[in-house]
Image (cartoon, rainbow, N blue to C red):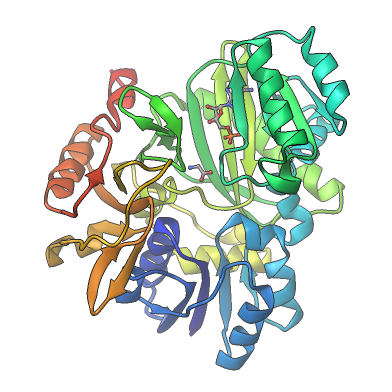
Amino acid sequence: MKILVVGGGGREHAIVKKLKENPAATDVFVWPGNGGIARDATCVPGSATDIEGIVAFAERQGIDYAVVAPDDPLVLGCVDALEAVGVPCFGPRANAALIEGSKAFAKELMKKYGIPTAAFETFDDLDRALAYLDTAPIPTVVKADGLALGKGVVIAFTREEAKQAVISMMRDKRFGRSGERVVIEEYLTGPEVSVLSFTDGETLVPMVSSMDHKRAGDGDTGPNTGGMGTVAPNPYYTPAVAEECMRTIFLPTIRAMKAEGRPFKGCLYFGLMLTPDGPRVIEYNCRFGDPETQVVLPLLESDLLTVMQAVTNGTLADCEVRFSDRHAACVVMASKGYPVSYEKGFEITLPDDLADHVVVAGAALKDGRLVTSGGRVLGVTATGDTLKEALATAYDRVRRVTFANAYYRRDIGEKAMKAGK
Ligand code: AMP
Ligand code: GLY
């Protein structure tokens, strides 16, 4: 079976490794992949947003099944375009990917269907947004409506900061068209939980919960990043919380999408905050999280390809999706200076026996050697009977991987360890 995975980071590497556990996955292509993924699959150079190029390649190769992993091709209609030429896909169509592509859409959906989230206002007009901020409760949260590489959210602790954020998004177009509209919302507090789920539009099966570490520095300091590490399961996500989320958030969301004529098929990601008043949706993503996938998939005991095909065929209700009750950890090794500015091109030393436990996010092959080519370079993963054991193994492995200017957080999982006691 010929499978095409669209994307090229650590998440895609984790997906490729898991898909390959099924012997039917004989030929796996990744568009564009990266120098590390090239060890496990055939990488095809190209841009993940070149929908025409992806479709032409899929037709030429006779691709049997495609997995579209990143947000931008999903929002641009990559699944619609592949389906139009007869390629079955894992991932939502563009009209459902809007749940991530527009925060204003997601917020209006939650309001209309009573799904708990932060109170909010949406603005298309700069002056109205600034006037609103004269009296809005502070702290407040300013979000660019569209995709902004995870950087379109500003937590403002003063009125001035909030106004600056709005000006930089709406007037100075810091995020281009993504910031022409902004959502200004209530500031919430509480532990954050990521829950990825499989859904075929009717049935929803949550995956094991996880905890991301978004800030660059130890102790949750420094700028926001794409994610510096993850652990699963998330100890704050108790069975009682899980039951409440299923009832008040997960099922109402897929029913709402269906009622709106936008059935969601694929991986729906719930970014949740467990506030003193109950769980609230912070964000939806229309895809697997990165680096959440790197800890969630290693705990999946069922066959990923079978589950994905059940999602595509609308038969998820009849498909077993089983997770292990073990623990997993992922420590991201980044280039020093990420996410602001960093150098690339340093050779990576990766012992062969670690290959199964390392996903490559930003590395290229140069004269047959693996060199750094991005901010997040590698994700080093481990599983264990306890979180403590998973973390200890992950950090032991981190110490055996080397490249110049490597940086990683030393405290991944510490908060979870304390919460779990
Ligand atoms: P997002 O890109 O929407 O996931 O937001 C990035 C981060 O900003 C989240 O992981 C939260 O830590 C924080 N955040 C987003 N919305 C809120 C909110 N309403 N209240 C407090 N923190 C928030
Ligand atoms: N780790 C958060 C995300 O994938 O958006």
